Image (tube, rainbow over all chains, first blue to last red; front, side):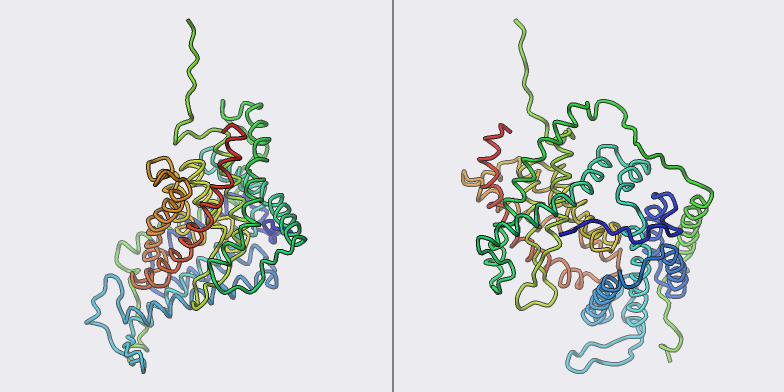
Length: 280
Length: 186
C-alpha cells in the first residue's frame, strides 16, 4: 500500500514558488470569501481562484474523483440548507422574501433570496476548493514543516508536522503488513457485517497491533532526538526559504484582495445579491 | 545530604516525547482514517474506526498530544485525499479539540471512573466527542450553513459515528496499552 501525499503539481509554475505561497494564499482566500455574499463578487473571486488553480497544472484525471466528491458534498449541503431552513438566512428578515414556488409534499416555500443564497454558497465553496487543492498538490511534502515554521508556527509544532509526514509512508507499509498477517489468520475486513458495532470491533485486529507497534517503535525516534539535545536551543532548518519577486507579487495580490473585500464588506456592498430575473 | 527530585512531566509540557507521540498519533489517524464505512440506514454518516486514535492518544498521552493528533491527523487525511489541509480547517480544529478534551479529562477523576480505566476511557471519549465537535457550529460562518443544517447534517451524524468509534475502540486500545506502558516503564 502506498499512502503518501501526491505531489502532482511538481514542476508547475506554482510548485516553483516558495512553499509558503500556497499556504498564505489559502488563508487569505478563506478569510476573503467568508466575508462575501454578493454572487457577483464571489464569481470574480472564483475566476481568480481558477486562474490560480491552473498555475498548479494539476492533471484533471488525477483529481477528477476529488472534484466530483467535493461538488456532490457541497450540493448536498446546499440542498439540505435550502430545503430545511425554508428560507432562513442569517441577518435577513424572512418576511421581506419574495416567494418563487412551494415544494410539493414538503410544503417548504422557496424564495428568490434562498435560491440566490444557495447559489452563492456553492460558488463560495468551489472557490475554497480551487485554492485548497494546490495546498495538497503543489507543496513538496518535505517542505511543509519548514514552510509552517517560517510562517511563524512554533518550531516544535513544525517539527511535529514534518515528523508526521515522514511517519505516514512507513506506517502505511506497517498497516499493509498487519493486514496481510491477519489475512493469513483468516481475517477479512470487507466481510459484510451490517452491525456497526461488530464492524468496529472487526477493526481491532488491525488498529491495536499497528498502534502499539508504532508507539513502541517511537522510542527510537525519541532517543535520537534527546541524544541530539532537541529543544535546548533555537532550531535551524536545512532548507532555506526565500521569497522571490514573483512570490511577493502573488502574496501581495492575495493580501490586497483580502483588504479590498474587507473594506467593501464594511461599506455594506458584500451582502446577499439577488439577480433581478429571480425577482420577476 | 543531596537529594534528587524526580518530577513527572507537566500536562502542558512539550518535550521530545510529546512531539513524537503526537506525530505518531497524527500519522496513524491519517493512514487509518482513509478507511471508513457507511452507518447502515443512513445516507451521510460514515464511521471512521480510526477516530478512536484521537481519543486514545489524548487520554493516554495528554492534551497536547490529543490536540495535535486530531488537528494535524484530520488535516493529513484531507491532504492525502487531495482536498488540501486548510479546506475544512474548522473540522480539523474540532477533531483537535476532541483530543485536547480527552487529554484534560484523562488527567482528572473521570479517567478512572468506577476504579476502571476501561469505563473511564469510554466515558472520556464520549464526553470529548460531544463537547469537541460543538466547534463545527462554525460552519455557519465558514460555509454559510444554517444552524439547523449544521445540527442535522453535520453535528449529529459526526457525534453518532465518533461516539460509537470512541466508546468501543478507545477502551480496547487502553487495555492493550496499559500493560505495555508498565513494561516500558512509562
